[in-house]
Image 1 (cartoon, one colour):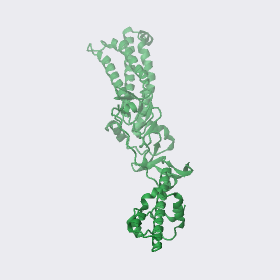
Image 2 (tube, helix red, strand yellow):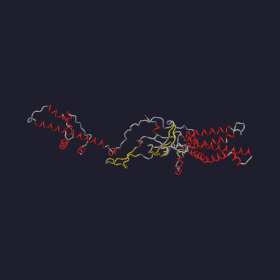
Image 3 (spheres, rainbow, N blue to C red):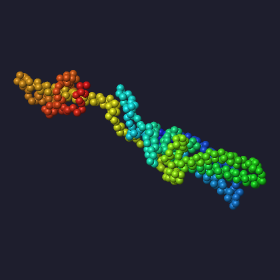
Image 4 (cartoon, helix red, strand yellow):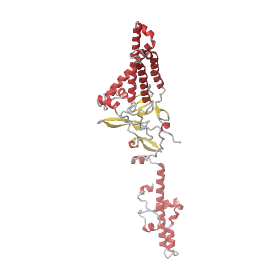
Length: 421
C-alpha cells in the first residue's frame, strides 16, 4: 500500500490526525507552555475575579472581569495552536541534486579503474537579485537545493524553512514565513494578558485595603493569591514583554531574529527594508502563502532521471568499461570482415590463375565462394591476423564484393592506426 507524505517524511517533525497537524520534534514543551498560561488564569478566576463580581455597579458588571479573562485566555491558546501546529514554510527537499547546476571539476579527480575521473561538484553558493541587489544563497546538502533568500536549515526540525526566524522551544516549532504573524500575535497577546491579570490583582488588593481600612500588608495577607499572581506576571512581563518589543523592532526594520544575530556586526545593507509602514503591512496584511507540502497526499513514484550531460573530457576519462569492450568487439568484427573479404579476393584470383590448367569451375562454384561470409564465425583468429598481415594497399572494397555479400564498410568508425593496435 502506498505511503502518504507524512508517513515517509525525512524531517524530524511529528504529525497527528493523519498528517493534518504538524509539530516540531520538541512538541512536548507545549505542555509546559500550556501550564504556564492556564494555571495562573485558573488561580486568577477562582481567587480574584470571582470576588469582584459584585464590586462594580450595575450589580453584575463585575462578571465582565471574569469573562474577559476567560475569553482572552482562549484567544491566546488559539494563537499558540496556530503557531505550533501549522507548516512554518518548509521547502520540500529534492530526491536528487539539481542537475542543471552539476559541473565536472577536472582539478579534483577520483581514480576509478586506473583512470582519473573528474569529480562532480556543486557551486556552494549562487547569486540572485533582490530589489536590484545581488544576494548570495547557499546550497543545502541535506535538502539538495539552493535555499531561497532568507531561508535557512533548522538543525532541530531538519528542514529548510522560508524566511526562517528561529526555532522556538516554547511553542515546539520553527518560526518562519507561514506562522511568524501568529507567533508575534501570541507573544504580544500573552503580554497583554499578563498586564491584565497584574492590573486586576492590584485592583483587588486596593479594594481589600478600602474594605478593611487596613494597610497593604493586611490586604496581601487577606489575598495571598493576588500577590503571587502579581509577582508571576511581573516576571513574565520581562520575558514576553521584552520579546514583543524586540520583534516590533524587527518588523519595523524587516529583519528576522536569525539575520539580526548573525549579520549584526557585518554592517550589511538590508535589501528587504521597505520602510516602517510597508514592513508592518507586509507582516500583518499580506496573504499567507499556501503550504508547499501536501502531507496527506500519497508518495509519488520516482521518475527515472535523464542521463547527466557529459563533457567530452569526462567521457574520455570516465568511460564505461562495458562500452569499451563493446567498441573492441565492433573493431574485431570489422577486422574479421576485412579478413574475410581478403580471403574471397585471393580465392577469386586463384580461380582465374588456374584457367585452362585446372578443372573447369562454373558460376555456381564461384558464387558459393563469394557467399562464404555466412561462415564468418568459423574463421579462426590466426587466419584473420595472417590475412591482415598480408593486407596492403587501399582500404577500398571491390564493387563486385559489395554487390554479392553483406560486408559493410566501417572506415568511418576506425582508423588504420587504431586497427593496428
